[in-house]
Structure formats: C-alpha cells, structure tokens
Length: 172
Length: 434
Image (tube, each protein chain N blue to C red):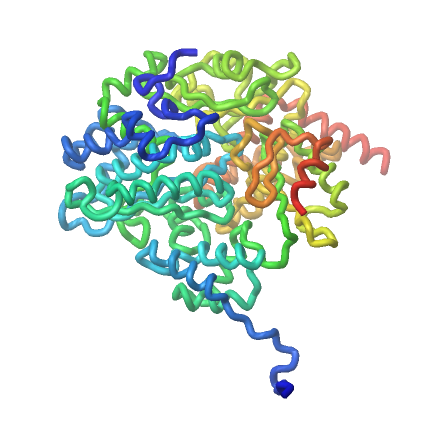
C-alpha cells in the first residue's frame, strides 16, 4: 500500500525539518566534557557540524545552541565572527591562499592570479562543478615555504603557479 | 653548526623532521619527562616558580614579559580553587612559524611543559588553544596527550603527588585577534574574540573568572629544562651575547635563499640569522628593510643588522623583537605595497570593538592603495602620520591597532620618497584630467 503524504497548509514554504545526526550529537557531547561550562564547546560544536556537512546551515544554530546551553542569537554571533566557520555551502575542497606579508614578498600575487584564471572564480566563490571554493586567509605559519595555500587540511608550500594543475589534480 | 644536544638546544634536541615526532617511549629515552619528574619530586610548586624567576625566562610570544613574575600573581594555597593554564598556540602573527615546529615535531615536550607549568601554578585543567589550520599539530598533540594520559602523567594523582590535572587541545576557527590573551580567553569560553579590559589580569580573573595563566608555546617549552638544569645553566645558553638567557627560535622568511627556523643562543645578531643560517638574500639582491618579529613590529634597516636580537636592544633601535622571526624585503620590492599588505591584514582582522581600529585601519588601506597605484593626493602622507598617532598606544581598547601602526610609521620614516612618488604621480594624473 502506498504511504499517503499529508502536507499541512501551514508548513508550505517552510524549510524542511532539520536534525543533527546521531554522530554529530555524540561528537558534540564528547567536546562538552572538556569544559566546566558547556558553552566553551561553541566553536568545537560548529566545527563538528561543518566537518559532517561542509558548512553550518542556519537551521543547525538553534539545535547546537540548545545542546551547549547557549542561545541561538549568541551562537549566531559567534558563528559569524570566526572566518573558518562557513555559513553558506562550499565546494568539496576549500582552497585557502595565504595573503600575508611573507607570501606577498615571495609570489602571492602571481599565485592568486593563476588560481583565479585556472578555476574561473574569485575569492568567496565556488566552481560550477562544486569542486573548489577559493578563499584568502591570513598567515598560515609556513612563511619559510611561501607562497603557501591549504587545500582542505593539506598545506602546500613553495607553490609554483606553473605546477598548479598537478596540485589541483589530486583533488577530485 | 654546533652539535645539537639537550645542553645547548633544549627546545629542538629531540627534533628530527625526517624521522617525525618521538612517541612517549622514545621521548622518555631521550630524557623526556625528567623535568616534570624532578619538579614533582624535588620541588614545591612555588619553588618551581622561583626556579623560572631565577632563570629570568621572558615570554617568547612577543611581549617579553618575565614568565616567573607572571606566574607569581596567581593565588596559591589550598583555598585558591580552580585555576587554569592556557597555552597560546594561536600562532598567526604574519611572518611567524616557530610554534608550529615545536608542536608538530616535539609534541611530548609541549605536553610535558603543560604539566610542569600547571604543577607550578596549581592548575586543575590546561588548554592548548591551537589555531584551526594547524591540523598536523592537533593530531600530534592529541596523540601525545593520549599517551601521557594512559601512562598516568595526566589525570588523577599524577606521579603519586595527589594532584589531579588534565589537558586538552582546543582548536580555533580563524581570527588573528584570538592571539591576544584576553580575546583568547573569550574565544575559549565560546564567545566572540573581543579583548577584555585589564586589570583585572587573567592571573586573578581569567577563564570563567578564575585565575588563569596564558603562556606562549615556546615559552612553556623552556620550562622542563629550566627545572632540570636551573637558572644559571639557562642564563649561560645565550653565551654572553646579551643579558637575557636561553635560546630562541629565530627564523627568516621573505626574499632569502634558505628561509627557515633555527634554535640559536638568545641575542644572536640578525646578520648571522640572515647571512649564515638563511644563506643571504635571494638572487644577490641587497636587503632593503626587515621586520624583526612579525607584522606588528617596526621596520628596521640594513644598518641594524649587527644588533643582537633581544627585547631591549631591538626596542632601543625603535622597534620590537616580537616573535624573533625576521621578514626580509629586497631592494627591488615596494615598501608601499608591503605596508599596504600589512595594513590590509590588520584591517581585516580587527575585531571591530572600538572605533579607531575598526574605521582607522580601512582608511589607512585606502590611502596606501591610492599611493601604491600612483593615485595619491597631497596630504596623504600627513593623513597617514595622523592615523599612526590616532590609532597609537592609549587610543584604542587593545594593542591591535597600535601594533598595526608600527610598520606604517617606520616605513614612512625610512622610505618617505617612495610614498611621495605615489603622490606626485597622482597629482600629475589629476592635472591631466583637469
């Protein structure tokens, strides 16, 4: 027998119901145990959700807030303050290009130009195939290897714009 | 280069990048955790503090404040209640890449330091506030912490002392301002990283209103060997090059032949760092200017190369040693562009709390970009000079904007003609258009 789907008039136009997964909840609980005040797990919890979903949807905020004993407005303020919490969808791989002084002195401009040309996007944008999001970031603490960038969790140093195809090719 | 041993290179003697970090067994075999064991066996907490005071260890995060004095403000005794030790591992000062080395390659030294320092101040919990991008360091530290916990070096009744203590890695999510100790505390509590007014100092009221010590990675990593070998040994490490003791992780980045980071006697000259260790300037170019220790330090010139790199000497030369990792600019590179890059960084990383910083820094970027593009107008240099005063010490809530003004004021001082050229070009353009 086919299951009947009932759509209530009042629900039309509302976002689909959102729920944190069991894995997310479990990891957030673990994080909370490190602190005498659960609110200290704010950033950790946001990062856990981001790890699972790639970004932190608006609907996740009230639910995370409830778990850590904060309120949604406060957590929203935290979530929008930190540059590495993404509040809109990103590509499968996030490229963060160091634009600070040591890389500026060792070829940042050329690297930025080459990346933008190769990917056809600018900072803050995602490629149409959802493969890469391109962002600039402050000093990555690898100044002896400038110019530097990270792709996901991987650090790339002494990046030669001519070798970008090889580097990017490792990320599908 | 001199032979590397625990006696001469207490920070890096166990590091072998090709081999990777030592596990607990390997680290203990290399005399690891001997400092912690000696501390809890031979000394009361205050005696460890005294030993650090005797060594006159000065903070390696940039400010150079004596660590022992910092610790001595923490209330001690059985009624002191919960206290916290926080390691500032938010290394985000542009041009700085020393703490990464210690945490990735010597994680057990970091963990031993976090336990030994916590014993000295009687902390119940320690947090390593690590910047989110240091993924390799986070994995290495978490592995070392787990090994230490399993071996009874963390947890209940550590080494039979009756003292309970645990330590966790807390990773951040960006924002340079987290490196300021009170902003770091706010961030750790799960708030925006705005700075707090001082006093009260964190040692009195810090994390969750409890006494808290915030120390830099490199500072802490000196503690076990100071406990083990004493203050006189530590003072001797600088080989009389300067009155401060110890070694320092110095480094060089920018247009050098072999950029890198090395543990050298405190007070080594910049000339030695640049010419011997970093192999001199790339492509035979001349050195134009250098930042002594990060984006928030005044530029110095080639004539300052022979000064010993220590807090007081570099300060007398009109700058700050900061983190001690120099950034070198070559003769064919633009100072206006370099300063525009620095101020863009500071403008973006302002937390926005106070007006001079939030509005003044973007203004300086607009002026500098115009000058860089040959579109400056008469009076722009004077406006920038005014900003260096209005965003200077005492005018803002924290040290972010005053730090930002240091490279700007020194670049104008030493390279004014470069700024004037951008204004002359702008004036000529305007005349053509008119």
